[in-house]
Image 1 (cartoon, rainbow, N blue to C red):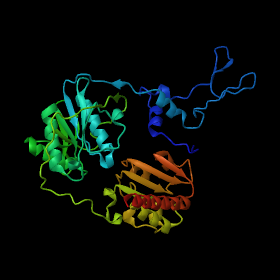
Image 2 (cartoon, helix red, strand yellow):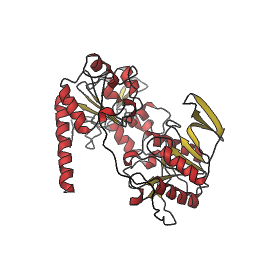
Image 3 (cartoon, rainbow, N blue to C red):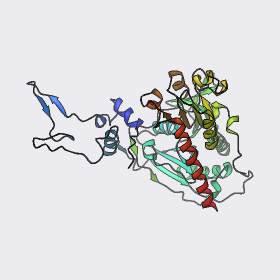
Image 4 (cartoon, helix red, strand yellow):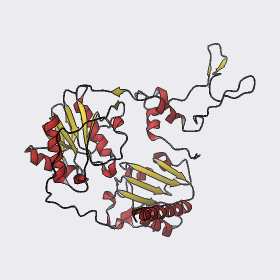
Length: 406
């Protein structure tokens, strides 16, 4: 069993939020307190208490280890279950599911759908192909419809529109919600709207009653219009669901989809040089800072991972990286799905620049630096040894994949 203590950012956030229903469960257990007469009282049933016979109460579940007690409480106390036995209507959501998982944009979209559904409606998520997501319940999904088949693999907008038309005919949802993103939701939503001969609301960032507000004029103006049935929402359109869990009951189509002859052929992904990707559009960024001592090894690791290179201001000022590679408020604001910070302590300007990143991995010698506090996964140790081990792990994984394919 590993001795590495892993942080749970969600549990820490709940412990700070007094309005959250699980806040009380996340508080540390009080082992001693002062009585009304000034006598210090102790909990004799508490873990670690030493009785008069010298025997210490031991908890073998692992709750005594630092940082684990919060996760134990989170596992024991579950969020209240929201059930909709007979939905009065449906709010259909088509998430992007980049990499087979819900993105932050998808979770914002589900939060908006939860607002529109209220207590009588149900949120129906429509997912194409296989997925790897296991947190639909805490994301706000009441019903889940998975449209499987090889015809939905890759870039297949025509077949997906046909599938959405079948879902629309069967469930007749009150609203359709799709992310207005470059990951497929924006194009699919507009194709679907043309197929339904409906005018969608695009770049929507707020809904008030029966009116929606979207961005216009190159994002410099707001455009208000009556709430349509088809909505293409922008990122941060609503707060993601965090205080309830949902049933995620599977549903199926009552009709069989006929495979249409596509007019568009997907030739697969095209290899792109990670160094040619603009920092603001990169999905995977490998960033180095003052703690990097072997920059040749850093570049070798970035190439092995296929990541776009970034740097802190200190590394740029020292001449190790170009100015256009600087990440932060004084450089480029990034929105990567994965951001790896090697030897970066985490100045406030740098943390502002990576605020929109989904997952942050920190490699640092200082366990108390701000970047470690921000990271979803932290590795404490010498960067050179960790990068070398990372290169070897990537090579072993790829060699194993080649042997399996052969």
